[in-house]
Image (tube, rainbow, N blue to C red; front, side, top):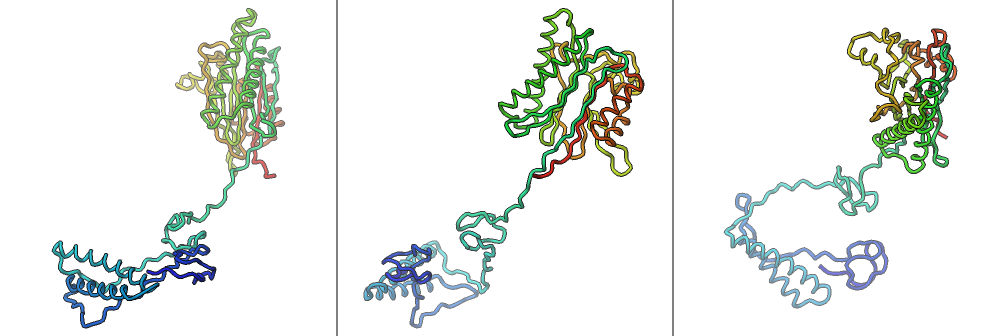
Length: 419
């Protein structure tokens, strides 16, 4: 093989230097291919049953070497370089043939069938070289050959419409329920919405103190924690909710020990922290959280209780000893076996609930569900705006006796329109 002398590149026409093998401008090879080796004379290869003699082939290669040696000795410049390249190639072939003959091989089989031509139909968009049809990366430059995936966007965040209402009822003198609905932000970035219902207990003003202290503690704990960093997954969010409720339990228990008039006070606590399209729930006691969705066509709305009542009567319902209807009026329906501020050690239930546009979260104290069935509750919520539904539910419970404090929070989630 010979190198193109100084002048212009045959491909791009740019000037090149002497003895360069690759054009520095376009990358084209500047090496001139050797001319075809031609052997003159009467020597022929004899084909016998699709085989040829390696010794006959060896003789042709030796004759070719003699031809190019003479040319090498008599030539100068480019012609001498071409002869040298041919001698090198033929010497390699001669060595290979000699090795095969030394191993006892005398013939080689040939075929008239051409091998299947390799096709490289997939052109690289970066370097232009061909590649196999199913190639993922360019064999020449390594660039990706896969078509770009269609751009996807995360679903828009859900925007809750929230309303709540709390009432003393028609029998009690003090409202020991505490409700809260608010949002968390970091700078200008909205984090989520916090919903809380707490139903205090303990007599006199102790129940009211317990529920208010629990709600305030949870709210402040979450605000401080979220100002530092945001949890990375569902498990971390639930751990944060559990930690907030544990802190509230310790605060209420400490306050009860510090004042003998408040000894034994405690509270239920049901919270829902909604972030993006997830609701992280924490619960202890017999307040409740529901997920309500409108039914399709003429179907009734769907109402799913997300929490478990921590009462003896609820366990009797679970084992089939009494019916859910009988539990509503059972004389021991208010006896809790788990609450906040009174139990050691404290354990709260936590769970995560996926949310979708149209979903409704409802949190309430037992004063509501003692008088209103789940079906009535769901029907009122899906057919009225949150504020009107909250008022209607409390009014209905009062019309049916209002024997306890009545509190309800309703959050109706819809897809936030793109700005």
